[in-house]
Length: 319
Image (cartoon, rainbow, N blue to C red; front, side):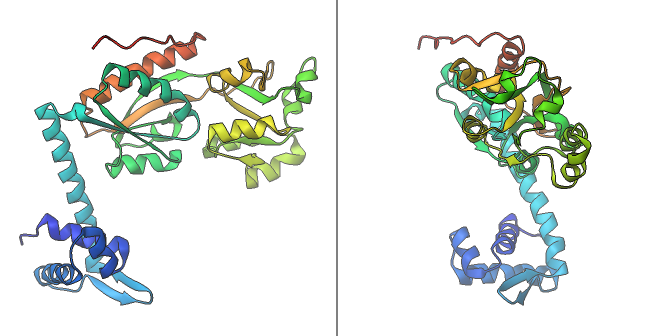
């Protein structure tokens, strides 16, 4: 049996759109051409690949089997193209990075800026997405590298990673917050106010809820410990400035707002958490030269943040 990749792609797109007309439009071919392609594939495998349902079409059991292999073939084809670009030295043309909207995005901005100064012709594409989606985006070859807190991705057997520093987490609130007036604030004082933060990994949410007073602990374990949940660091900080909510985040994320007098760090409350950000990639995919350079620059920038030193603003090299 000699099945062409083109036909498998038609099968995959048709399953995604559940409509011949929409799939044909996405593939930039006519609907009759798509129908002939699917019919030819059905003739090769000896059975129907789709059945009509209310509101669209769905793959048959045979169709689902073929779809699994179609996705694997497409990933292999993309990996082959990636390896060819590396062998030709063309991988410096583009780097695609996936990053979470909270700590990761706050971490990599200066790094991508410096990479651009060093290699102004390198095209860098950033995809900001919830951290839960990033591994799947890497598997789908939407991105080459992902930057996120490593506690979850380190458990995935198909990923390799490079860990960065373990950053100090601080309690943050608006300037003039009642917490800032306490001579020696304690952890229990923190829980008197609404908690704000990004969507937490299960282990982090459980640990935070466990530290709450007994009367709030059960509800926090059941519904989550946060009153205000927001994955965008910039939106979250704006919320803090106009409320009595408090948040916990790596100190490097709030240095600018603290210097400007917009937010306050409450010292003395021991949280016992030190998130470890890092960069990860699929084990069986070769990291390009551009990717390796980005990883080195990221590690350098992260080390400067962990040491408490403000990163230097380097001039671009003469051209």
